[in-house]
Length: 214
Image (cartoon, rainbow, N blue to C red; front, top):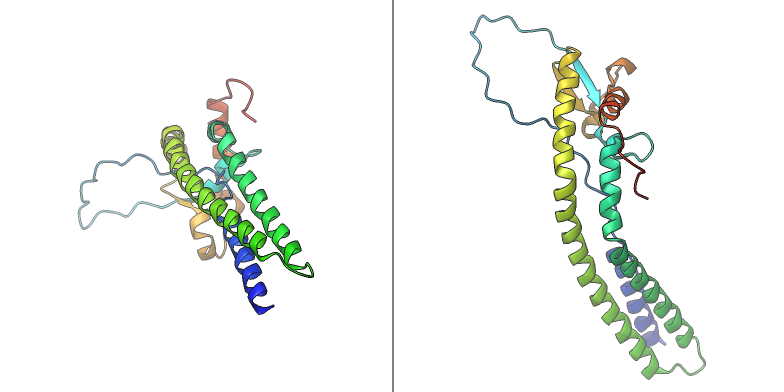
Protein backbone atom coordinates (compact mmCIF):
# COMPACT_ATOMS: atom_id res chain seq x y z
CA UNK A 1 0.00 0.00 0.00
CA UNK A 2 2.84 2.38 0.71
CA UNK A 3 4.14 1.88 -2.85
CA UNK A 4 0.68 2.54 -4.27
CA UNK A 5 0.39 5.72 -2.24
CA UNK A 6 3.74 6.93 -3.56
CA UNK A 7 2.67 6.28 -7.16
CA UNK A 8 -0.53 8.23 -6.69
CA UNK A 9 1.21 11.06 -4.88
CA UNK A 10 3.75 11.36 -7.70
CA UNK A 11 1.04 11.62 -10.33
CA UNK A 12 -0.97 14.08 -8.28
CA UNK A 13 2.09 16.29 -7.89
CA UNK A 14 2.72 15.99 -11.62
CA UNK A 15 -0.83 17.14 -12.39
CA UNK A 16 -0.52 20.06 -10.00
CA UNK A 17 2.80 21.09 -11.56
CA UNK A 18 1.42 20.97 -15.08
CA UNK A 19 -1.69 22.83 -13.98
CA UNK A 20 0.59 25.73 -13.15
CA UNK A 21 2.82 25.31 -16.19
CA UNK A 22 0.15 25.01 -18.85
CA UNK A 23 -2.03 27.94 -17.84
CA UNK A 24 -1.80 30.31 -20.80
CA UNK A 25 -0.44 33.76 -20.13
CA UNK A 26 -3.16 35.93 -21.61
CA UNK A 27 -2.35 39.19 -19.88
CA UNK A 28 -0.31 41.73 -21.79
CA UNK A 29 2.73 43.44 -20.32
CA UNK A 30 1.92 46.65 -18.51
CA UNK A 31 2.15 49.71 -20.72
CA UNK A 32 5.24 51.78 -20.21
CA UNK A 33 4.48 55.36 -19.36
CA UNK A 34 8.05 56.59 -19.62
CA UNK A 35 8.51 59.35 -22.21
CA UNK A 36 11.26 59.27 -24.81
CA UNK A 37 14.76 60.08 -23.50
CA UNK A 38 15.58 63.77 -23.46
CA UNK A 39 18.97 65.38 -24.11
CA UNK A 40 21.06 65.89 -21.00
CA UNK A 41 20.39 69.28 -19.46
CA UNK A 42 23.16 71.83 -19.12
CA UNK A 43 24.32 71.97 -15.49
CA UNK A 44 22.83 74.95 -13.67
CA UNK A 45 25.07 77.47 -11.92
CA UNK A 46 25.74 76.74 -8.29
CA UNK A 47 23.71 79.79 -7.25
CA UNK A 48 20.73 78.96 -9.47
CA UNK A 49 17.28 79.10 -7.89
CA UNK A 50 15.66 75.71 -7.40
CA UNK A 51 12.33 75.78 -9.26
CA UNK A 52 9.10 75.04 -7.46
CA UNK A 53 8.15 71.39 -7.74
CA UNK A 54 4.72 69.97 -8.48
CA UNK A 55 4.39 66.21 -8.16
CA UNK A 56 1.56 64.16 -9.64
CA UNK A 57 0.68 60.47 -9.40
CA UNK A 58 -0.44 58.15 -12.20
CA UNK A 59 -1.38 54.49 -11.83
CA UNK A 60 -0.20 52.85 -15.06
CA UNK A 61 -1.91 49.54 -14.21
CA UNK A 62 -5.25 51.23 -14.96
CA UNK A 63 -4.16 51.86 -18.56
CA UNK A 64 -4.90 48.23 -19.41
CA UNK A 65 -8.24 48.10 -17.58
CA UNK A 66 -10.94 46.91 -19.99
CA UNK A 67 -13.60 49.36 -18.78
CA UNK A 68 -11.66 52.38 -17.53
CA UNK A 69 -8.35 52.12 -19.36
CA UNK A 70 -6.82 53.44 -22.56
CA UNK A 71 -8.91 52.12 -25.42
CA UNK A 72 -6.12 51.89 -27.95
CA UNK A 73 -3.97 49.84 -25.57
CA UNK A 74 -6.81 47.56 -24.44
CA UNK A 75 -7.95 46.87 -28.01
CA UNK A 76 -4.41 46.11 -29.16
CA UNK A 77 -3.89 43.69 -26.27
CA UNK A 78 -7.15 41.91 -27.09
CA UNK A 79 -6.13 41.58 -30.73
CA UNK A 80 -2.91 39.82 -29.70
CA UNK A 81 -4.80 37.48 -27.37
CA UNK A 82 -7.18 36.61 -30.19
CA UNK A 83 -4.26 35.67 -32.45
CA UNK A 84 -3.14 33.02 -29.95
CA UNK A 85 -6.54 31.78 -28.79
CA UNK A 86 -6.22 28.43 -30.55
CA UNK A 87 -2.92 27.70 -28.82
CA UNK A 88 -4.11 28.81 -25.40
CA UNK A 89 -7.21 26.63 -25.78
CA UNK A 90 -4.95 23.69 -26.66
CA UNK A 91 -2.96 24.18 -23.46
CA UNK A 92 -6.17 24.34 -21.47
CA UNK A 93 -7.21 21.04 -23.04
CA UNK A 94 -3.93 19.43 -21.95
CA UNK A 95 -4.51 20.62 -18.41
CA UNK A 96 -8.02 19.13 -18.43
CA UNK A 97 -6.71 15.79 -19.73
CA UNK A 98 -4.06 15.68 -16.99
CA UNK A 99 -6.69 16.20 -14.30
CA UNK A 100 -8.79 13.42 -15.83
CA UNK A 101 -5.80 11.08 -15.80
CA UNK A 102 -5.12 11.81 -12.15
CA UNK A 103 -8.76 11.06 -11.31
CA UNK A 104 -8.64 7.81 -13.31
CA UNK A 105 -5.52 6.63 -11.52
CA UNK A 106 -7.06 7.44 -8.18
CA UNK A 107 -10.05 5.28 -9.07
CA UNK A 108 -7.80 2.45 -10.25
CA UNK A 109 -5.85 2.50 -7.00
CA UNK A 110 -9.05 2.18 -4.96
CA UNK A 111 -9.86 -1.12 -6.63
CA UNK A 112 -9.67 -4.23 -4.46
CA UNK A 113 -6.78 -5.49 -6.62
CA UNK A 114 -5.09 -2.46 -8.23
CA UNK A 115 -4.02 -3.04 -11.84
CA UNK A 116 -0.40 -1.97 -11.63
CA UNK A 117 0.17 -2.31 -15.37
CA UNK A 118 -2.70 0.05 -16.18
CA UNK A 119 -1.66 2.48 -13.48
CA UNK A 120 1.87 2.63 -14.86
CA UNK A 121 0.52 3.17 -18.39
CA UNK A 122 -1.64 6.07 -17.24
CA UNK A 123 1.27 7.52 -15.31
CA UNK A 124 3.40 7.42 -18.47
CA UNK A 125 0.62 9.16 -20.38
CA UNK A 126 0.61 11.85 -17.74
CA UNK A 127 4.36 12.32 -17.99
CA UNK A 128 4.16 12.60 -21.77
CA UNK A 129 1.36 15.17 -21.50
CA UNK A 130 3.38 17.11 -18.95
CA UNK A 131 6.36 17.32 -21.30
CA UNK A 132 4.14 18.23 -24.25
CA UNK A 133 2.41 20.95 -22.24
CA UNK A 134 5.66 22.45 -20.99
CA UNK A 135 7.14 22.58 -24.49
CA UNK A 136 4.05 24.23 -25.93
CA UNK A 137 3.77 26.64 -23.00
CA UNK A 138 7.39 27.75 -23.38
CA UNK A 139 6.93 28.35 -27.10
CA UNK A 140 3.68 30.22 -26.53
CA UNK A 141 5.25 32.45 -23.88
CA UNK A 142 8.10 33.32 -26.24
CA UNK A 143 5.83 34.02 -29.20
CA UNK A 144 3.37 36.03 -27.11
CA UNK A 145 6.16 38.16 -25.69
CA UNK A 146 7.50 38.95 -29.16
CA UNK A 147 4.05 39.76 -30.53
CA UNK A 148 3.13 41.96 -27.57
CA UNK A 149 6.39 43.83 -28.11
CA UNK A 150 5.62 44.37 -31.77
CA UNK A 151 2.05 45.53 -31.23
CA UNK A 152 2.10 47.28 -27.87
CA UNK A 153 5.54 48.88 -27.67
CA UNK A 154 4.68 51.66 -30.17
CA UNK A 155 1.44 52.37 -28.30
CA UNK A 156 3.29 52.46 -24.98
CA UNK A 157 5.73 55.01 -26.41
CA UNK A 158 2.81 57.10 -27.64
CA UNK A 159 1.24 56.94 -24.17
CA UNK A 160 4.54 58.00 -22.59
CA UNK A 161 4.92 61.00 -24.87
CA UNK A 162 1.30 62.02 -24.33
CA UNK A 163 1.70 61.76 -20.55
CA UNK A 164 4.81 63.92 -20.69
CA UNK A 165 2.91 66.61 -22.60
CA UNK A 166 -0.18 66.27 -20.39
CA UNK A 167 1.90 66.84 -17.26
CA UNK A 168 3.85 69.75 -18.73
CA UNK A 169 0.66 71.54 -19.72
CA UNK A 170 -0.44 71.40 -16.08
CA UNK A 171 2.81 72.61 -14.64
CA UNK A 172 3.76 69.20 -13.23
CA UNK A 173 7.48 68.84 -12.79
CA UNK A 174 7.52 65.17 -11.72
CA UNK A 175 5.10 62.31 -12.40
CA UNK A 176 5.38 59.16 -10.32
CA UNK A 177 3.92 55.74 -11.11
CA UNK A 178 1.96 55.00 -7.96
CA UNK A 179 1.63 51.30 -8.86
CA UNK A 180 5.36 50.93 -8.22
CA UNK A 181 5.68 53.08 -5.10
CA UNK A 182 2.29 52.61 -3.43
CA UNK A 183 3.72 51.27 -0.12
CA UNK A 184 5.85 54.42 0.14
CA UNK A 185 2.90 56.81 -0.22
CA UNK A 186 1.62 57.70 3.24
CA UNK A 187 -0.72 60.56 2.33
CA UNK A 188 -1.85 62.17 -0.90
CA UNK A 189 -4.79 64.40 -1.74
CA UNK A 190 -6.99 63.08 -4.57
CA UNK A 191 -6.11 66.05 -6.77
CA UNK A 192 -2.56 64.78 -7.31
CA UNK A 193 -3.83 61.56 -8.94
CA UNK A 194 -4.04 62.36 -12.64
CA UNK A 195 -4.69 58.79 -13.80
CA UNK A 196 -8.28 59.04 -14.97
CA UNK A 197 -7.93 62.61 -16.19
CA UNK A 198 -5.03 61.56 -18.40
CA UNK A 199 -6.85 58.46 -19.66
CA UNK A 200 -9.91 60.53 -20.56
CA UNK A 201 -7.74 63.09 -22.34
CA UNK A 202 -5.85 60.41 -24.29
CA UNK A 203 -9.04 58.58 -25.29
CA UNK A 204 -10.67 61.79 -26.47
CA UNK A 205 -7.71 62.43 -28.79
CA UNK A 206 -7.40 58.80 -29.87
CA UNK A 207 -10.95 57.45 -30.27
CA UNK A 208 -11.76 53.90 -31.22
CA UNK A 209 -11.96 53.37 -34.96
CA UNK A 210 -14.35 50.43 -34.69
CA UNK A 211 -15.76 47.81 -32.38
CA UNK A 212 -13.34 46.58 -29.74
CA UNK A 213 -12.00 43.05 -30.26
CA UNK A 214 -13.64 40.47 -28.04
